Length: 143
Ligand code: ADP
Ligand code: MG
Image 1 (spheres, protein in one colour):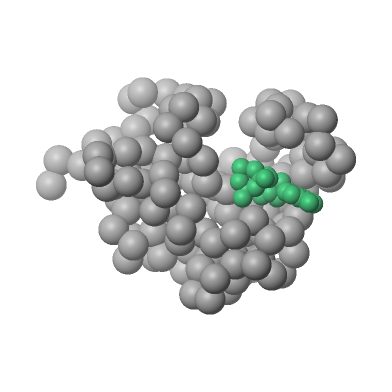
Image 2 (image 1 turned 60 degrees about the vertical axis):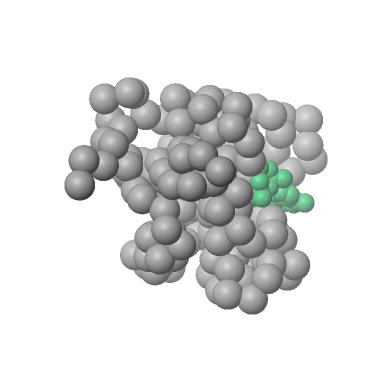
């Protein structure tokens, strides 16, 4: 495996529940390093642009509404196989199907408000990181 970077978003439902620290702790305990981090309240244009790939899906408008309903915490995670590792820590899209001990099983209840976003492939990770962070906002670990 290789060292990868992936984009993670702690969604408005999880921020509202005050589980930002718990979720970041899952990433750290899972061997992923936070190399960029910010809080933001997304505009409709930002959320709509980020989820452009889902534009034709029936849940798109509700997804944009949800993602702009409160602030989010956006981070770049780095580590061995970080993209798959993050998806594994997150659990399935629908919390009802998420394996025990995953973030979505523990912190989410419904498929639409499911606590976290994670990139699903190297190309999407690269594009999603660039969507939210400039190169100089990503801080490679030096120790
Ligand atoms: P994932 O976030 O696991 O990569 P998708 O990329 O398929 O899942 O979907 C993006 C987001 O859209 C999901 O995380 C969820 O918030 C929302 N979503 C997906 N499927 C549904 C659905 N059937 N009904 C409502 N919202 C959904
Ligand atoms: Mg996805």
